[in-house]
Picture 1 (tube, rainbow over the protein chains, first blue to last red):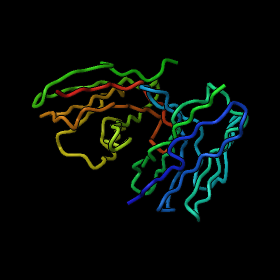
Picture 2 (picture 1 turned 90 degrees about the vertical axis):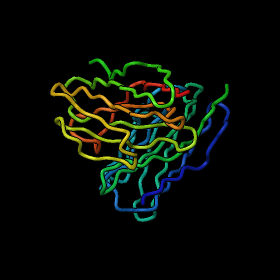
Picture 3 (picture 1 turned 45 degrees about the vertical axis):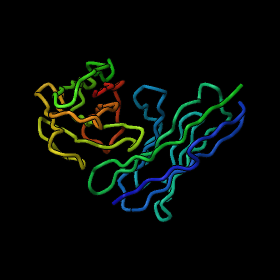
Picture 4 (picture 1 turned 180 degrees about the vertical axis):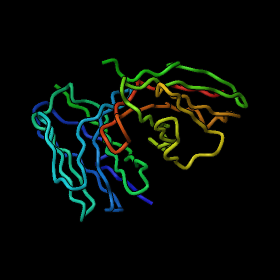
Length: 111
Length: 113
């Protein structure tokens, strides 16, 4: 059974810092890994999707990497802003086609 | 394009009742997935529908069911509600399957008393 762990569970940083959020998974036989953000009481917004054959994806200040062999992904946020405050979730989809989500990292960026 | 819409946004029910939630996907999207989010269990996959057929199902009891209509709109039903069914129910759509980027609706918050 796939298990997804996100570290740290919570993070509070001053504006402008570069951040690294971590996601690890137990079964490396995956189709893809997605990073989402969720604002309080709202749905999820897809940030990046990395196919199993890819090593990384970039969108603006966000960069996500994938290392299947070690079962890890990192989300790098450059020059953080208060508007980046949210919960960040990673989800892994494998052979069962059932996405498995981590519990998320709650990020606060203070001015 | 309009985003994924879910109705109702908030719902209060009592134990033993049943509830039906609705999801309208983005126009042209044929895959609809449902998720349950609770503080205790996090976000868990319920099921995925494509072309009116359930394609995948998560580890939930038979009280949770769903269906999809020919216009790709989907409903999920929970019968014999339990207190533990209180949660945010999220719907997501994608063009073909949940292996692609999924677009989430705002969710329906269900409270069971």
